[in-house]
Length: 478
Image (cartoon, rainbow, N blue to C red):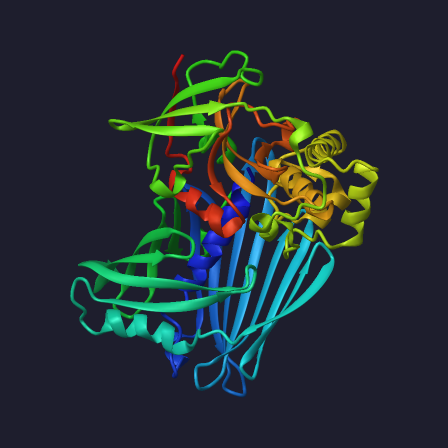
């Protein structure tokens, strides 16, 4: 799984929600300028970010947040960056948001502008532009001012405020609730200063973070889900980020010895310890979790299906129609994806056979390489390269283009080699009269028993994985 598609979204949300808290005021002059932050993952530096607040000649307030990741993925060094620029009117109303991501696949752009009581959002992903009309966001400067007022007003333990920030990448407003947990004193720039320990909850993403905010509203540190840390630093220190940490190995659950017949066995039993929450416990015919004192006993199975019982396309089952629709990142209504799907399946109408044909084609035609990118189906069809995220996104795009309901799932999978263990991974589920798991990365029309599925759905849902990144211990039970 490309962890940094997930981590990048989460960090940019935290930066948006955290680093602007000191800057938003109806008189922003005392707070103009830049702040720099180091970005850390489980203690290892992975990049840096900055926030900058300015006022233009018309009195409009501009807030810009940048995040740069310096990534080492099993020896593949890559950069990935995100920029978000917000414009507020004098009365505090949000007027405009520009968001851009840059990675090895190119540039994705998201532009949202308020027109009356509506928000016009234009997204350019994989070279394809789309526009949608949404209700005007409720985000205002007053939301950010509530936090400054909270920490500067001699708050009591337990006092809290809530506020929202619009995320153009996923076209939703992300809400946060900030609560004062404790107060302490620190020496900042030689001056004794009150610092408040806070808890921020993001219900939309299922994430809780712990932060430290000075009494003037400056965010000193924010630790998200116990894994990602955004820390205030001098610019020269923040910029001192290299590629020393191997993010693939350091966040895996390494085991003592290889698993025999891992890809062909019918069943696998594991003992898993770590911060698994109820949201991550998914039980069905493919897998079961059973509580055993301080651990979970996991049993994974490789299932089989009867192709003859699978319905023909297009699938008309009402309950799964949601997963046949195109999205910003799965452009299944694009002619290139539709034509490629038709080319692959020919005259076949059996849904299970079509799923197998699409999985085989993706596996056989894509070049596997580690990558850090904001993936989408159309771009992957053009490049035909990437890791498990790109394999899955292309398979899902082709499946929906062919009339099959399909969506992302993520968790861990066993991988052999010099460091055998369970690594974060992404694959797919497709409806063929029943939901089956498909892993096109490993050319598996039916996913093997070593897949540990923890979440289902798009990136916002996958954010629930953050608390377990690098935190799981797995033991094979024979």
